[in-house]
Image (cartoon, rainbow, N blue to C red):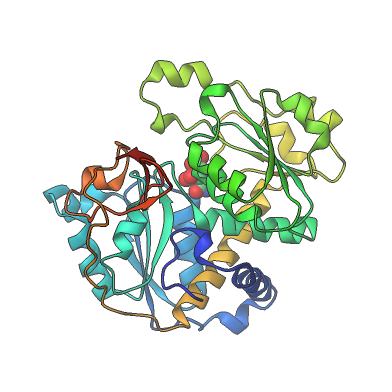
Length: 357
Ligand code: NCD
């Protein structure tokens, strides 16, 4: 792998992604051959935000590879509750372990952690920003259930603004030939600007539509998502958005016979339970693919023996990121890192938000 850490799936080339998908299938078909593949290695799972699938599949993945796991799923049980900085926690855990999976409510946290960790870091979800290992799960599912990662019309429905799984999936699928996105949401919950910038810069075709039923007949894949209640400023705003898009049996009447329905889970009320019994529903088998995908990723990263003490990184600009949910708002010692996109506009390298100079 060309990069030590996996913060964004852009850290992997298209070939590296295909290699991981193939290794994931190989492990699924011959699990005994990999039962000791990471023997003696330790994974840390640092979960500052709730999780069922991601945390448990990381843990199961490491245990099935013969490795061990340490970590926390509630930062209140760690020194974070005493006011310890992310830098200090990561410096210490990076010294104890061989690989770290981190989830945090602030955007850009995994990138910040990677700047202080001797061990490689995997982003297990950073606020409403990115979720690369869910995308790995999604592409292993699509590769196996559709037979290809190309030439698809992919509908993404629900909370496209705060849904980090949506952002990572779009960023990744645009690298495979001839995929087109149908973005189904209310105007308030459309994809953020940096995802539009990414699609526009790659000539990727997309349309934004307000109706699931109208989009249905053209879709090869439907990626349903939960309205991300915890990311709303107020309960009233959430109440306005919830329940707008619900996939049920009737809506599937006009869908293609070979449609694949994915969902990162957890589901709240956006897919009715009867849909679980439709053969096009793939969201539970998706979780199984996810465990093998994480096994393949962990093994690939550990095979590289890429421990290194991180160098000091200096500010690129003397400007504060304007995003209040960026990790730089919570951890003030972090260097201010931006890339220029022309004019007076800078893009934060942690959270991808735009800031005016
Ligand atoms: C997703 C997440 O945490 O972003 N869940 C997951 O990791 N499988 C989606 C969600 O919480 O809605």
